[in-house]
Image (cartoon, rainbow, N blue to C red):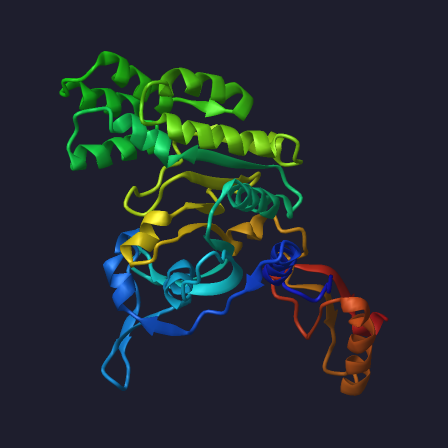
Length: 363
């Protein structure tokens, strides 16, 4: 690996090599696209606003808001073909919290077409392997929207209550769940199962037996069977010990079904990866295919990337007014061999960080 690369560039190259090793092809997003599909699916973008402008032909355009939507929009359906694409792109959003424009570097992949057990396991495995590229312990939290919705569907709840229950499960708010269910006339056993699901977390070997007890006889059984097959298929893989079943991982039911997951790396307080099965999104825009994928926020990796990214340069070469400029340039060229980053300056800034400081008149 070229030592002159920035930390985020190294990360992108590692991820790209991983995805290409499994036959995924690179996808390049347009700088801007027609806004209509994003306007119809704002919730899929997590509530963050899209940057828009009117082009010279009067069309309302969006500035690189989401790669997944771009991929879905650009692909033409071909019977029996499963497309496997990866990307590394900067996406532009207006933060829901700060209301400021931000640019986020994402890497990820999408598998669109016939999503069978193999394709599901491949994407889950690649998500975990992506987290493992950076030399830190990691966890991939997995749940299944079919299990969550299967249990909720056994309750006589309204659509708004259904969404609120999903949100409460996602935050593991047992008190909130109990309070909401207290006003609902339903089998106490169903309520108890939902409470247990919300509190459930652990390795597949620990959690699956408990899941069997609470899913039996409900619509959630179908989701459980898929989750069991995925766990069994990955049991002998190197990533299995880093998998955790946790039903606080939930997504919008309007867009996601099946397996959903989130990734965490030791040393980073927030999730760095998010993904899952999103067939309903394709159906909303008239495409009769399955889809599963994930995105990894490369910028969130800055704290753990194994590189001298905390340094302004490897070497500071400090010269004075009396030093010959040509001699200083030659010395800088010598020091920058083998990929070393050399900054030439006459004064060392107080807050600058260098691996080594060399004074030209002392060499």
